[in-house]
Image (cartoon, rainbow, N blue to C red; front, side, top):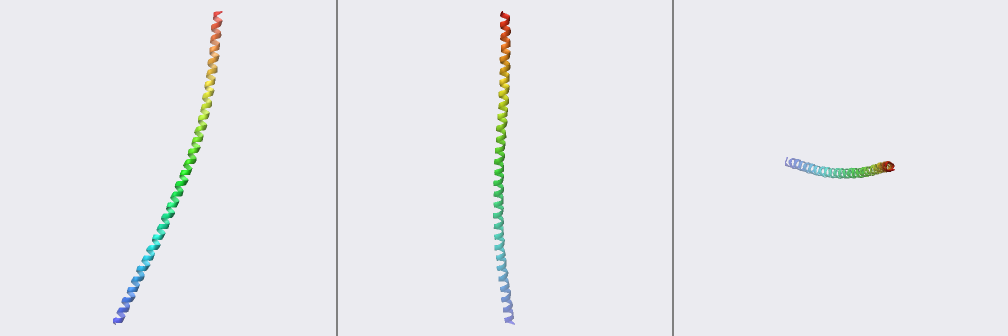
Length: 105
């Protein structure tokens, strides 16, 4: 009877040790998977960040280009208005002087 109890104790002890080993192995596998997931997550976040930065740089470049084009267009319009104003002013001055000189004669 004592041998049977000792065998049961040994079997129970062996089962308990096997269970602990299995739990430890599962814990190691879980940690490995969690680390893999964290690395994957960081990589994807870094890729997304780099893509966002690249898109932002492209958009900034496009906006600067459009702004430069608008400035050039505004400058051309301004120059044309200035030219027309000076031409009108010159023509008005010529008319004014010709009338003044006509009155003196």
